[in-house]
Image (cartoon, rainbow, N blue to C red; front, side):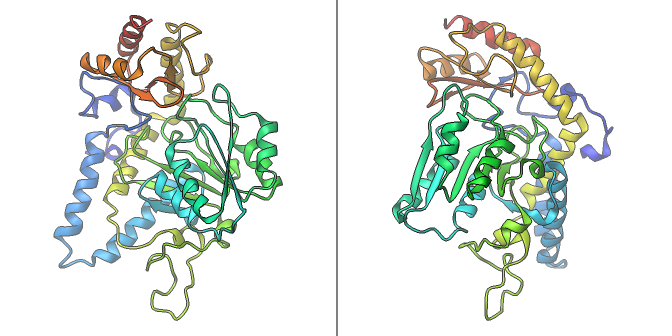
Length: 379
């Protein structure tokens, strides 16, 4: 049964019961991977089966294109955009790379990022250094961006890339303010928002960024391969993606390339909609619980966990900002392994040097207490 066929209201505990992978595990790694509810996997697999088994009698391209449109509409509604501003991608990394490949870079151009970025927001720019692009890194402290240092860094930038919620500290960056500063400098703004959907409300229109890359395999509990890219309608008109295919253009057989309007120009060729069909089912489940309700429960659980963490060990803010909580331990890798041996799943981070617990609304108080108790033994 799909979530749309069930009661329109769902509790976090009911959502958890629908996720077979969780079982009795004390799982705190949603910031990396959110295991999917059974009906999400079924929606994706059923679509794939129907698409393949019926392809001899039903136009597989026509059905796929209809599905792309349906998914764009659902994603757009969830993030506060128009369907024409959504491109379906494989991942956040994929979306960032598509933007990086759509700008005509020149030697001396400047890209600005923070030192809080995931490799998804680091490697595409590092690659551009081979073409003479300067990558300028804004150093931060405690997961915070100094606005004066940021404004100075972006003053002559071609593009600025930063995260809405940092994967390192779980801090929420002031997206709209940082976008405004970059806009005043004439820089393109690209936001990595992968840690946002599913745990906090999203309104990309309010952010004002030129582009926002995200995916649904973390807090949304969707399948891998279901990424999406928001591109402002006016901004898209000036972008010419290097990766181009029949889904990118108005006439695949035309003498000249005429890109489709809006974000569709960033889609390339034949990809199965199956993962994105699963994403739609996952978004429905999140909405059935309610994003605000999820956010409130995450705040309650993270506060409960932080109450057990000494100030000198807590690397994330004491006040709630997200479900990502990083703590200092003497040997992160060994700690992760010891906890895993006891059925508690967290992850280590390369920077800051610690372990990160990603606490979702589907987590339980007893699991949080268990994690806090085991970490206390480390201190």
